[in-house]
Amino acid sequence: MSKIISVFGSARLSEDSVYYKECFSLCDKLAKLGYGIKTGGGGGIMQAANKAAYLNNVESIGINIKLPHEQKLNEYCTKSYLFTDLSLRKQELLKDVQAVIVCAGGYGTLDELFEILTLSQTKLKTMKIILFNKEFFSPLIDFFKNTLLKHNLIDNESLKIFTLCDNEEEVLKYLHL
View 1 (cartoon, rainbow, N blue to C red):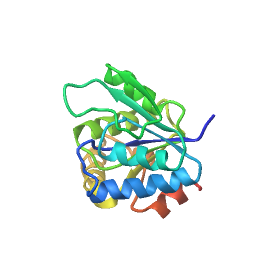
View 2: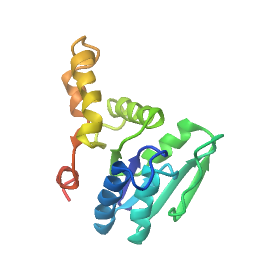
View 3: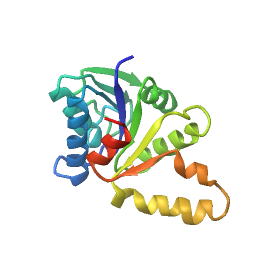
């Protein structure tokens, strides 16, 4: 099995966004360690991740979706697949990956994150899930703790199925790289 990490994040962020730059730098380090990158194949965060893989000559996979707007395959994918069904696309994004890194994103990224969290309680128990950027994700984790946990809608174990990392070193340490 090849070493692949799936990266999720917004298609809407430009190359000058701090989130784009952080994602590129992290994926550049992962690619230098021989990890291929799998994304949704679009722009923004997905482009940053695929570009880092492409420039390091490792697998750069785009799992694209046919949408009325936004989703055009970025030029840095060395392999791509086109889906018309979001559910099947999400399954493919998780197939044969060693870890999932979720970066800044909107509703689509949050949809993917929540599905991954739900699946990790049942099917993906060994999947490493990283939320990347404490400033971005801390309010969401506060909601998990202060609302969901407080009202017994999740348990303490549900807070242990992911980790929050703020920099590349934390990600590499968590992945034991």
